[in-house]
Image (cartoon, rainbow, N blue to C red; front, top):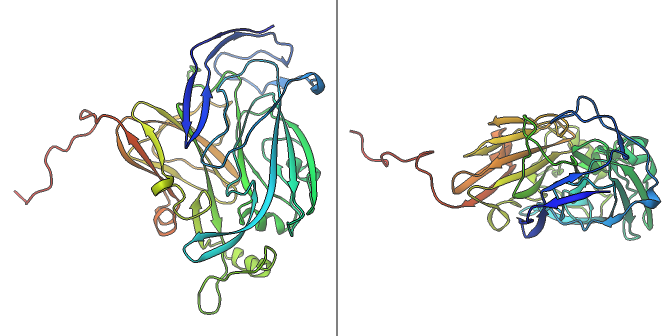
Length: 385
């Protein structure tokens, strides 16, 4: 029996995608999980008792293109659910920079693939579809899951096949998923864009280091992508007629470990101009940032990471007030930024060569009133006195 007392829901904006936030006070029996939860944070991981999945509520999550996130609540203390998602593989040519093309291997047609959002203890049930129009075999490895190479050994789908995988999300945090067919096909598929992330929220929501609730008002997903586009003898980027045609040249370019392009969300400038992120002064903005293949060093020019889960685990207290942090290769991080001033912010990798000589950056535009106490131009530029 679940008793629920709810504050009025707030409706949030995520690049045009609504996110429903409900702050709940609930009392719930401990039938689903064994072990006591220490105040604020767990002394050890929760041990989840097996469920009769046939008796659980099933919900279908509508996945959306990045940088948006699917509709979700920040807390959930009811019985675990079966969260059903569907991903269709699409091999398609995209223009990643003016005049530069690559055959992208994608989940649901985007680089990165869509962010999935569930709560700890939920079951994720994925239908993975590889249409007959594809050339290649694909699969999926969820870093959030346990066993069978993250599901990779159970999800190999040839063109014209589909499969269903169900796993239990018992580790709260943000995690990468990616295609992993085996051997050199693993990095080849990843650097062709076949990766994404899943966020497994704690059932009681995010917390500060003291264990107090932290609520976000907007949420964005950034997938950082490194590409290795081969060049011809004249130094021009090569273009290929089919997804498999570039394999030999790609592997040679990849062995240099030097990307030709490093971008946020698939293509140069995706999160700039018309694609910029937005916020209002006073809001908490959650950013989930994944890098499936290389390290990254996020920094918000003009602000800070007020709360940062650098290695992605929500079972650990966040670091506070960071200027720059590290995303390890093959992982995701979550950060909350309190917007205190209006104007233009730049969210980038603080390897500044990658940020500016490549394109690993995003623009966040904030609206609101300026606070002179935080910053004031005492005297404008003028001649020397």
